[in-house]
Image 1 (spheres, rainbow, N blue to C red):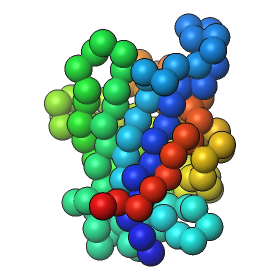
Image 2 (image 1 turned 135 degrees about the vertical axis):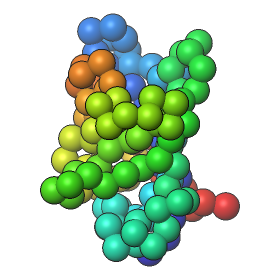
Image 3 (image 1 turned 120 degrees about the vertical axis):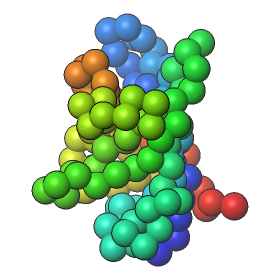
Image 4 (image 1 turned 60 degrees about the vertical axis):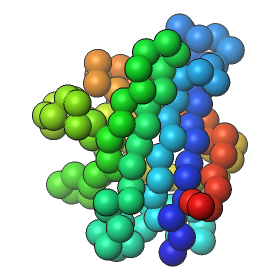
Length: 124
């Protein structure tokens, strides 16, 4: 198990037909050799599993990668404080976090958006 830094950038959608490098997430998580989030390692290192949501000119939001009841994964932001504001990763438990892969996140406004994994690197 190695804790990795993962960078996601917004893929093409109706608001950004060419995608956007200025909108996305940087997060850290323990990944297995095949690029999946390791739930057992997360339990041991959850304090190191952080997320930063960057969204154009808006102030960055900082939070944690959390595991919800039933095994789903989400980003929880301290500034919002409530579970209703968590951003859920669609089937994150099954996703492979490797450059070029796509995944979806349900954001605080309940909008589902698609992101592309653009980088995965060892946490220094």
